[in-house]
Amino acid sequence: MSCVGFIGTGSMGGALARAAAKSGRAERLLLSNRSPEKALRLAEELGAEAVDNRRAAAESELLFLGVKPQMLEEMLDGIRDVLSARTDRFVIVSMCAGKDLRTLEELLGERPIIRIMPNIPVAVGGGVTLLCASKQVTAEDRALLRGLLGASGLLLELDERQMDAGSGVTGCGPAFAAMFVEALADGAVACGLPRPLALQCAAQMMKGTAELLLETGEHPAALKDRVCSPAGSTIQGVRILEENAFRAAVMNAVIAAFEKKF
Ligand SMILES: NC(=O)c1ccc[n+]([C@@H]2O[C@H](COP(=O)([O-])OP(=O)(O)OC[C@H]3O[C@@H](n4cnc5c(N)ncnc54)[C@H](OP(=O)(O)O)[C@@H]3O)[C@@H](O)[C@H]2O)c1
Image 1 (cartoon, protein in one colour):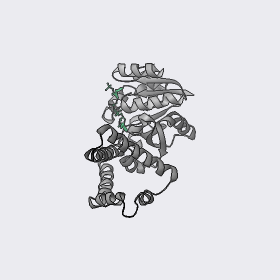
Image 2 (tube, helix red, strand yellow):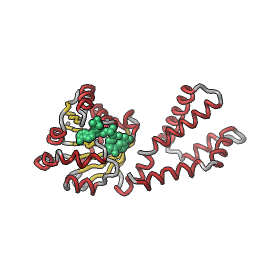
Image 3 (tube, protein in one colour):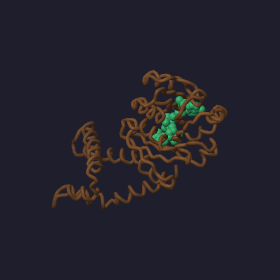
Image 4 (cartoon, helix red, strand yellow):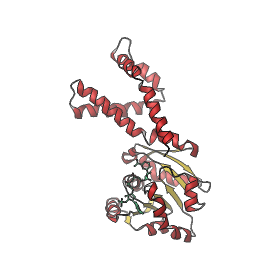
């Protein structure tokens, strides 16, 4: 049990704070946000304490930084002296896209720092959070983070050099997957299904297919082959997707996101 703080309780900071509250692993949960009402509202909902940045920085054993990357330096200017004055051990957890460990160490000094890259489905417990850690981070620190964020979905530790490639799938993928669901639903609407039903069918099909692949470990191509019966309707749909370079388009989307960097 420990004291966990969040500076920046917007959509991602808020979602992870909810997961932390759900875990029951935080003895105290401190929430701070530039517009204090947001932290206050969330603190009320979660039974946490709304504080200011300096108090979160002074008291948190695990301190999550949930501000936008372009706001990070300005925010740190306001708490740097508080962090430097601390003599106890604490770990910084940055979710700032594109801020690598070296940059974070330049900004914060050489201390235990964990860089995480969560994605939108953490809000419903179905997320993927990629992480990498500085040298000073211990097995206990990792276990604490895992315990806290367990309710948000899967946590995967990567070599930092793999973070941008992973993020191209996990961070950007929800947008690509949502487009696929939308397109499937559009097709069903064109064939006569009412929109809400079409969306429900498409999204549940995606969820179920993903669960099946994860649970069985089956290769996606093998699953596709199982669904395509000879002279059936599915193989006709597969033919149209191949004609339109569906798989190449999806691969290129991930590569474009990777090349843009985070
Ligand atoms: N959203 C995603 O899918 C996603 C995925 C991976 C990583 N991330 C990372 O998560 C971080 C937050 O993104 P977001 O989408 O959650 O943005 P967001 O909703 O705009 O949240 C950022 C929050 O930070 C607060 N803030 C700004 N400056 C502050 C300061 N000096 N002190 C305290 N709080 C401050 C903002 O307060 P106000 O209410 O006053 O604006 C806002 O509530 C970013 O670094 C982003 O790269 C997000």
